[in-house]
Image (cartoon, rainbow, N blue to C red; front, side):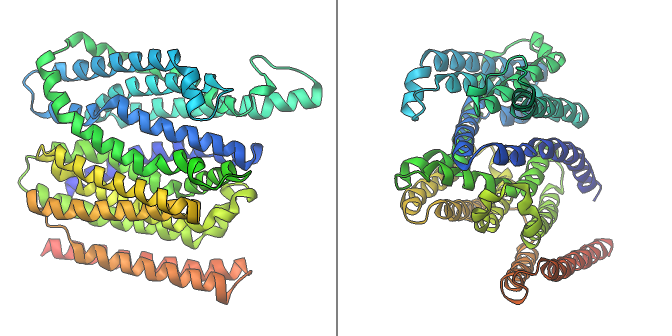
Length: 491
C-alpha cells in the first residue's frame, strides 16, 4: 500500500498540474468554437492530428528507452545526452526538410495557399520533440513540480497569445480602429498555430539546466542499444497515433464532397475534447506510472502491486465516464452550441479512452520483459483496424463511424495485450473486480440515458437529480469495495 500511495501521490502532483494546465489550455476550445465556424475549427482539428503523429515519429521511443537504460546501465550519466543528442539532430533535420518542401506538402494536404502552416508546425514539432527528453529526465528524477511549472508556463503563454490575437486585437480594431503590434486580421486561424509556436520556443530555455547534462558525453554503443529498444516502440507509438488521430486527418478525403465536410471534422474534433477529464487522468497517470513500474521491476511483490494499480485505475476511469455522461447537459456548455449535434459520440469516445488507458497498464509486460517487438505487433493490428473501419464507415456514418472505429480498435488492442501478457509475463489481475465495476458503470449509464431521454425529457433539473443519485450509488459501491479490499489485506 505504501507503494500505491507513492504512485497515487506522484499521479496527484502530475495530475493537479496537468489538470490545471490542460484545463487552462482546453479553455481555448470554448474560445475557438465561438470565434471560428465549424469549418475553420475543422482546419485546427485536422492539422493538430498531424502534429500528434509526427511527434511520435520524432521521438522514436527514446523517452521509454531513456527510462529503461537509466535503470541498469553502468554509465548512467551518458543515457540522457545520448538520447537528447539523437533526438536533437533528427529534429533539426526534420525542420529543415519540412521548410524546404513546405509548398509541395501544403499542396498535398489541400492547403496550397498556406505553406506557412507547414513551416510553423514543423518548428512546433521540432522544439517539442527536443524538449521531450529533458522532461523525461525530470520525471525520472522524481521532480514533478518543476515539470509542472514549465509545462504550465508553456500553456499559459499559449493562452495569453490566443487571447491577444483572437480577442484583444480584433476588439481594439473594431471598436477604436487601433491596430496592435504583430496583428494581421487576414491570418485568422493561423494565429492559433503562431501562438503555439511561440509557447514552444519559450519552453526550451526553461529546460537549459537539464539540457546541460549533454556535457556527460554521447555514447555510440549505448545509442545502438537504445535505438534497438526504441524503434519497436516507434511502431507502437505510430500505431497509437494512427488510432488516435487518423480519423480527423483523413475524414475530409472520405466524407461525401460538399460544404459540410470541414464542418463535420470541426464538430467531431470539438466533441472529442469533451473526453478531457479521461484524457487528463490517463496522461497524469502515465507520467507517474512509467517510471514507477520500471523502478519496482526488481521488487518481489511487483506483480501484486501492478494488479492493485489496475483495480484503482479502472475505478477512477469509470467514475470519470459516469461523471461526464450523467452530467452531459452541463459539460456541453464547454463547446459552442453549433457543435452540439456531435454530443452522441462523447460516451463512445470516453469508453474508447478507458480501453486505451487499460491497454497502457497492460503494456508494461512487453516493456519490462524487453519484448517491445510484440508491442509493435499489437499496435499494427490496432492501426489496421482503425484504417479499415474508418475507410468503411466514414462514407456511410460520418464521424459517428470514426468514434465506433476508435472504440473497437482500443478494445481489441486491450484484449490482445491482456492475452499475450498472460502468456509471456503473467500478472494476477483481478478480472472479476474489473468486470463487475464496468458492468455496474454501464448499467448506471444506460439508466441515466433512459431517464434523460424518456422519463424527464426536457426537464434538466429532474434529469440532474436522478443522475446525481446514480453517481452517488457508484461512489458508495466504490467505497464499499475499497473498505473490503483493505480488510482482506489486514487479515
